[in-house]
Length: 95
Image (cartoon, rainbow, N blue to C red):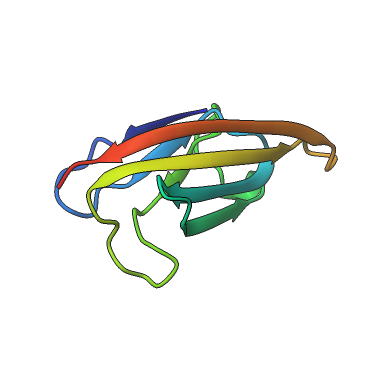
């Protein structure tokens, strides 16, 4: 799973997690371990054929994500609900 910025311009540009499994949960944390956001999805929520999931760079409280380094944990399941394991990654927000 990769995290990349979408091709739009301006502050509303979403981050796209590419290649996510058909369903699952992404938990986004600060480097100090604070949970910032949790994203759950099903196959209907994914865009494109590659499993692209958009994230609007907002916290659980609806605030804009501050600049900094963030860690994410993807926990995936296949279309039948079978666990596919976990993947950890990171991304940087520069404001």
